[in-house]
Length: 80
View 1 (cartoon, rainbow, N blue to C red):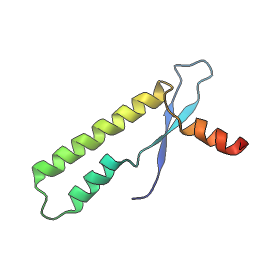
View 2: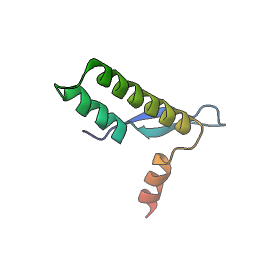
View 3: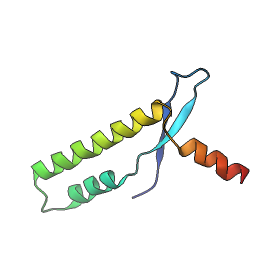
View 4: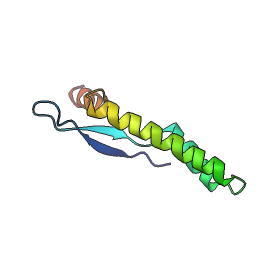
């Protein structure tokens, strides 16, 4: 699994820009393992997909509400 991110708008804040949200999660990894497993049933695949999209939506919501940490951690790395 390749680490990647997507930008999330924080426009609800004055001068809000974006926050980065890491889309590579353990739930997404579990979904991909399930989908690549030839013995997985359609129901198992659908459940794994639903779990991954729920987690993704939760992370996007948190980032858009200003609860993301990616940009903050990057700034600390830059000044450290």
